[in-house]
Image (cartoon, rainbow over all chains, first blue to last red; front, side, top):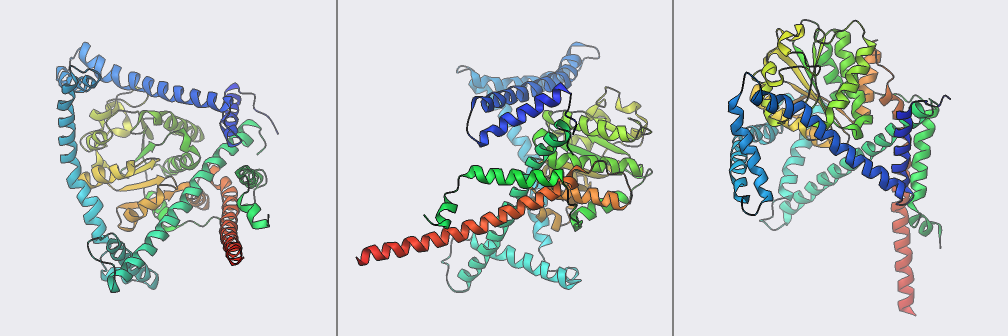
Length: 209
Length: 291
């Protein structure tokens, strides 16, 4: 066991313990650590934006040779969004918003349609190559049945009776399985974060591992 | 008050304590439970393993903040180690949001120190942050050099030897997005759909279920999901005899397994307790009505 002598490791370890103290109950140490975190995150982001973006990509190209005057238009458009803070000039935000919405929609709709819908539908087709082995065949059938019955479950314009009702019930079984899997993965994620912090405390701070 | 009633009213602090114990003990005394690589991780590993110094580059994206380091840092470092071991040119991008660049710097500094013969600009390139998210992904498809202008250290991209033959996605064999957000979807939509570049991903366990659909459709080359995915990649590196570092994800998997066992036990006991207590309460209610 060799406890760390680095001041930064000690600060990180104490802040970690202060945050975890919330598990017992809310307390001033937790709130202090929370506020430090909030302030640091915001400050860090602002510094990165200032030095990595505003200085090299806006200030320098505008004020130093060779000047890139074309930057004035996007900068003006961006600055118009600040109109929201003024009652007199809040109409200014309509122009950058209109530009952003129209450009983003035009870029996003075709690619989203292809990657989210067309390719997913295509992947659910029961083509002969999906039956190359018993395992693959079972998978392909499960995916197909799961897709169809889940879609049926979300079809609300027909009364759920006979075959349609049965299919919707099968659909809800698939949905529940998906929820269960998602919950299992969520548990894994949260435990992983705890493990990461414990590794830091035990290994880097206390030097036990 | 019976056992089941006491169990249902158990103070959650005892559960926190139980979880802490089952997490800490295996970290101090590891058991080395076996790790079996799954197909999505194996596919990603195999794809990178077939590449070499003459191949097109890997574009590795660091899209996560410090809170997700336990899950995602082992992934990004494993991919970096894999690429540097195989001599695959690797471009590390410091992420689509400003908070991620520091993490990318930590990852490359640590791994580069293990490979002293590898040089920045010759064997790997580290690109900094520029805002735009969607615009950045699209702009890389036109020209990386004009999009980023310099690398993280301020060296013009045009002057970096590794970048001589690398202009845009057509010179990139695979984009690997190590992400704690929905950015892999953006790489799919704007990188793959628009420019046909292959995409692989490493994601948090929370996000993994939503990406299986894209994996099944073949839109992702492979995937590492959560700490388990990272541990599997470390295992594959070790099996091949490649450097795998301290294997932090593998070290954490014993704790992960025991924590899961405890949670499963608590879920089962909680459900049994719920039904036992409900039955007892109904029975007591019926007896009261009879009287």
